[in-house]
Image (tube, rainbow, N blue to C red):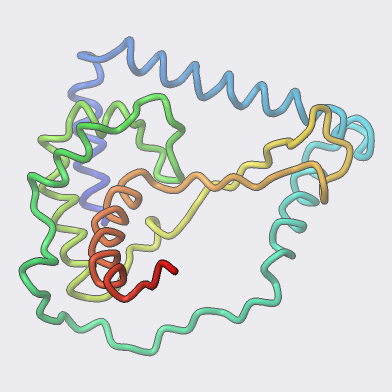
Length: 200
């Protein structure tokens, strides 16, 4: 995984001069969204928390975690030794490239912080390593930790929000590449499940 990020960093450094406008647009959009979100939480920051932004963040985090506290932890008991995967479940480089080429660039990135324009504009270069990682993941029955992580944003349901418990909605921003790979798996599962569903 580390090698992939070193490679992406080098691609980014080499090609960022070709796309300065995209980089500036993506940066400014991200920061303006953050500013709007922060401004919409001002009533909570200055009301209930007397200007303590850190205290508000910790309270929101505690509340969002409490929602799932009763769920048992997922314990994986199978081995991660590589297994044979049927050919129909091997993800082709060309298919990954097609999906990367259609990414919407104005959506927010996940915890990997890879801008969507980078994934889209360099899909030809990025598709082979992403396909290799996805296929290795399938063979080892192991999903990379970063692909399972998310940045959870507190988005107000009403403006201005007054209560954390009722007025904030958690929105998870997951890595775009994990969503791309999930799409393949979703289609495979649907092919198996759909004939068994009763639509009555």
